[in-house]
Length: 134
Image (cartoon, rainbow, N blue to C red; front, side, top):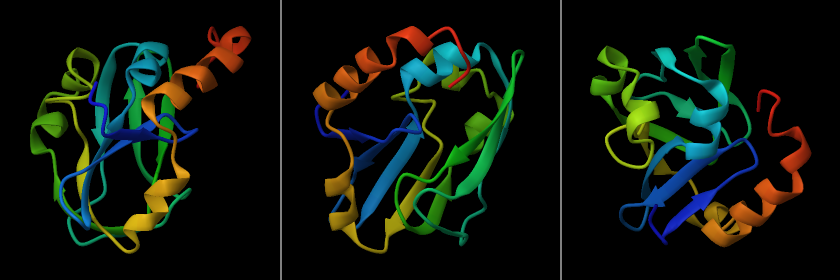
């Protein structure tokens, strides 16, 4: 994990690449809870996404989960490798398993997300629910 990553309660991570572009993906916790990811449906390039709204789905051997956008903006790039090999999400969620890149509408929106330490503390608060799907 990178110290410049931010996380939301929907278990998505965001890493700012430059002043208004961010890469987004699924947290290690979420991929672990889902089990083996077998299919990914991601937003297409040019799609506008809004924080908190569904912007794709991941299917695992255990469940199908909506991806909720952690920030608002326009999708500028999609990780085609994940579409062809969704297991990358399980193998390297913070590296090769990234999902998509977004040109942020308002980069200050990321200030509302959790730091890595805050996210770890958040996971501790849901410890009793960790056996459930996220």
